[in-house]
Image (cartoon, rainbow, N blue to C red):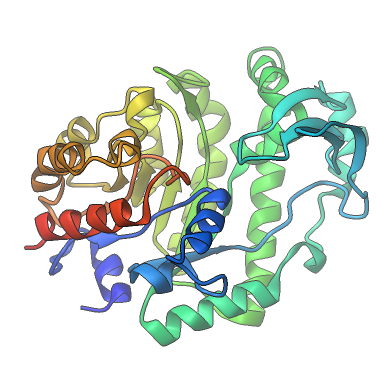
Length: 357
């Protein structure tokens, strides 16, 4: 089977020859592996490791596209920047990390209506047509499954007002949150229509929505259903109406939200973060007939660079997860530079060996 055929079947839980293969990596990993001679700078991971799929992030969803990021403070190790959302974020310069949320211009509905909403128009300047075209053509040539990728509404709202003010809004001004979610979902659909009309459709849609942290989601299942799920369903229905399956990524513990996410229509849950409390075997047992899974392999075992630890992790999960033809091999997060290239190759080889039908 080609990668395109394999992932297409896996997302529908139809018979395949083996489990799928894909992965995410921190930026520092490729730099390290290039220095070690494992990869060439011009290579993609998909090409180098023979992944079954690839994806491209093609939208810039910052509110004010014309605002140059303003450097507020800079040290040898960090840089503090105010971006086009009015968010003040501190990032590390020496290594990959998520940014520190320092402050936000938007803390309530009035600030949103003044500083953000007027800028949220489907401007083609938001779209990287060339990058999308390049990866799509590479996937067509290699028979890889190709996904448009980008964030959905939860991951569009918190960069504007931060998790704290967004969650307070859910409790104190839920209509504001509904309004933001509805506007962002409409904007996303309008941009997708512009992109696909000009460059052609992908094979699938990949939404990123980090809706949990350790042992807890950011919101209750009821709040998800009332405030976020309608926008998810709107975007997923739009994709399904064009024959495009939907993968949804979410770091953190989101198991309590899964009934709503499945009802919203996702075809595959990706990442399944073990250290946050997620258990791919438990999820597969409950949802395996209606939901494909990608991930759930504890990246800490790969980071150990110990084959015995990797063997135990893979042997304890893949024989069960591959039942029903709905599993793709992937770590439960991303591969850091501390992983040796030889270790990662062993992880792939052993995982696919166990994942054959």
